[in-house]
Length: 203
Image (cartoon, rainbow, N blue to C red; front, side, top):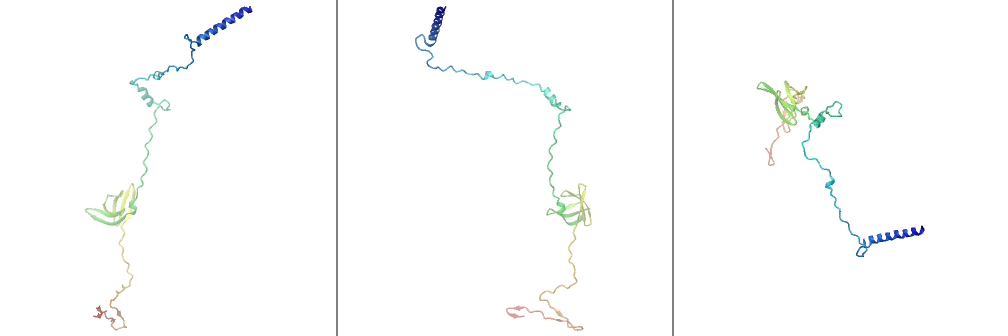
C-alpha cells in the first residue's frame, strides 16, 4: 500500500513539473514573461455614463400657477400681500417766512399787495399769492396775514425811525459868530467874523 502511494506522489509531482515547464518555457525554448509589456489602453466613454436629458417640450404650467394662487402651506390658502413700498425720507423744509421782513404795503387796481424781503430777496406779492409756500390772505393796515395748512402767521410792517427831540439847541458850527449877553437892557455884542488869510496877508 505504501509502495503504491509513493508511485502516486511521484506521478503527481511529475505532472506538476511538466505543467510548470509548459507555462515558463515557450515552444521555441525561450523563457516566457521575462520582459514587462504595457497593457493596451482602456478608453472610458464618459458620455455613455450620463443620463439622457429630456428634450425641449411645452410644459403644462397650469398646476404651477394654481399652486401660486393657493399656496399649500399657507393657512388661508392665499398668497401673502406684497410688502409696502419704502417710505421716502422726509425732506427738511426751511421756514424762510420766519426771517422775512415787510418793506411796504401798497394798494392799487382794486387789490392790495406787499413788498417783502424773503431769503435776502425783495419781491412783490398780491392777495392770494404764494410766498415761500405761504398764501397771502389779508392785509389789515400794517398787519399782513399768511396761511398754510390751517396755520396762520401775522407779519407787521415796522415803523420808520424818528429822531427824539431833547429840547437843547444844536451846537454852533466852528467859526460861526457868537453873542455875549451883557445884562438886561443892553444889546448883545457880537464878535467880529474871522478874516480870511491869503498868501500871509489877512483880508
